[in-house]
Every structure is written in structure tokens, then in C-alpha cells.
Image (cartoon, rainbow, N blue to C red):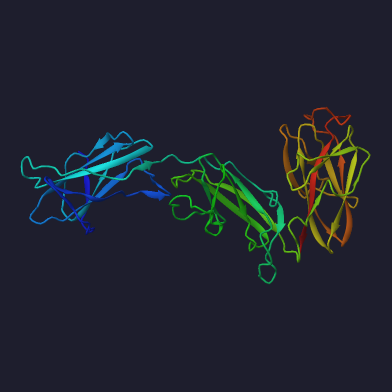
Length: 415
């Protein structure tokens, strides 16, 4: 027989329904239940059923019987048998392990349970509830065009005097499974408390954001300071269960620039002058940013693609290149105003390999240079292709793995 737990410290003033066999229990509930909209969820495979046993004068012994019923056909899933309890208390029973699904439970009471053949009172039936202990799928990705991973993103909205100067400079996108109804997130890596269930509206300040089709877009708070940041997320399902895995994302916010507007630190490749003898065209389906992408098709190493960018003032700038990796794109060196950018680890010319078997957008750090206010030239020079690059015919040119797909250049201004 399964044991009952009797909570003597909890009493109820609920009125009892007197029947020929005794009284009817009241206040039926499940200890772990969470009400989400019109549905009550229980994130436990051993639901703890509870009910109030009303006070009755002139009776000393009382028994209770719980039955867990499957819904909607009300078949008996588990039965507590007769449990000794006390009048004027709350009594509970832990049901055996059950599968996810929809249930109700019922309870009846027997007064004078020590008297042979004492009748049982009427069944009291609980509202339906859903047992859901299946965790949501783990988050699948965190991405951002505004704040690329491990690189500098848009400038902060926090001025040097600590005042917030404007709205968020960008956003970060979370992706999860179809059962993900919200994401909880943290800037510190620690999550506190348990989400009762996904809220009806997103609460970015409280660390929860709702999804549409498993996707959510988080505006980055403008008060985040310039520098390195860590973001952690977990998926939440309809019942408030959290995913087992935490996904992390690391990025840096560029320093504050007075009067900066979103995107002002970017030079879209399709909009800036290009100096090249190769075939170029604009591919509007390939962009990872808000514009299109310029593709330069070349059949030989040594081709140069030069783009002009404008520095708003004298300062040190980090230059980041956003483009496409693919199975017929080339390997390039980068020059700024004719000066070859070097790999900080080896001292050799920086090698940017745009080859990848499956096409995807990337953003890479080209270098950090001191620029005067005005126009400057960033040049990409194709070198020997990756050995795995394939040859294709593109816009009438045979591409032997030397082409470049360029989305934008980003100038990150440092203090």
C-alpha cells in the first residue's frame, strides 16, 4: 500500500457537502501544478494529489481513497486504497509513475472508518490537468548580423558619461524546436528560479522572450557597455520545462560613437565603388545583412577587388569582412591603403579562406589600423584556391575556385 502524507498544519474553512455516507472532500489540486492560460500542467511523472478533509463534529476516524483517472474516458490509472487521515486537514497522495498525458483524479471519504461497513461518501472530482515531463528540444542556434559571434558588433547606446543615448543598436536571434514556446536567457550564465510557464508577452528585462515557430529575436539592451559579452539561453516548453542544454554566445559591442545610427559602421559591398577587371554582379538572394551581396567572379589568382570606405574621424578602426563561404570561393589576402594585413599570431600575411563545402555567411576580423577621417581603400587579393574548391561557370566566366562573395565591410571605431 502506498503511503499517505498528512499535513496537519493546513486547515480549511471550505464548507463540506454532507451525504448519507459522510462528507465530500474539497479544494482538489496537484501540488506541482502550473496554470498556463486555460491549461493546468504538472511537470512531474509522480503527481502529488491533494484535497481538504472538512471538519465534522462527533467523528473521530476518517479514511480517504484517491483514484487517478485517465482523461477523457476516466479509466482508473492508479488507486491509493484506504488511507487513514484526519478531519480538518489537507491530505495528499503521491501517485505512481505515469506517462505524459491528460488526467483527472477523484477522492472520497469514509467517516467512522473503524466501524465495520461504514459507508463511503460521494466522489469529488478534480479539474483536468496535463502531466508533461518531456523536456523541450535544446536550442539549435544563436545568430546575429548586428553582433557576429566572437567579433565586434554595432556600437553601444551608452555614452561615456553613462547615459543611454538611443534605442538598441541591433538584435540577436534564437532558434529552437517546434515545442519551444519561449527562451530564458542570462548575461551571466546562471539561471535562477523556475519559469511557471511561458508568459503571454515577452519580458526582455526579466530574461524571457516568446517564440514564433521556435524563433525569437532579442533586442540588445542599449545600456550594455562596449566590450566583451556572454549570452546564455535555454528553451522552455508549454509546461515550463527547461531544455537540458544551455547554449552560449560570445560577442563584443563596439565603443560608443556620438550620433551613430544602426548600420552606420557598415559599407555595403553592392553600394560602394569596386575597382576590378573581373566580372562582378549583385546577388540579392545571398545577403546576410540588410542589403544585397556583390559577387566577383575570377578565373585566376592575383585578381584584386578594391572597395572604398569612409572613416568618420581620425581614430583606430577594426575592419571586419562579411561575405560568403562556398565550394567555389577563393582564398584572399587583405590590404588597407595598400598595406598587407598580417596575422597577429604568425606575422605572415593574413589568410582568409572562403572555401566551405556547404555555403554559409561569415564575418572575419581583417585587422586593426589607424585611419584619418576620409576615404580609404580596402583591397582583397585572390591567391591560390583551396585544393578542394571546384570549378564552375558563372556569368560566362570559368571560376576555378578564385571568386569572392562580399556582403559588407564593417569599421569598428575604437576610442
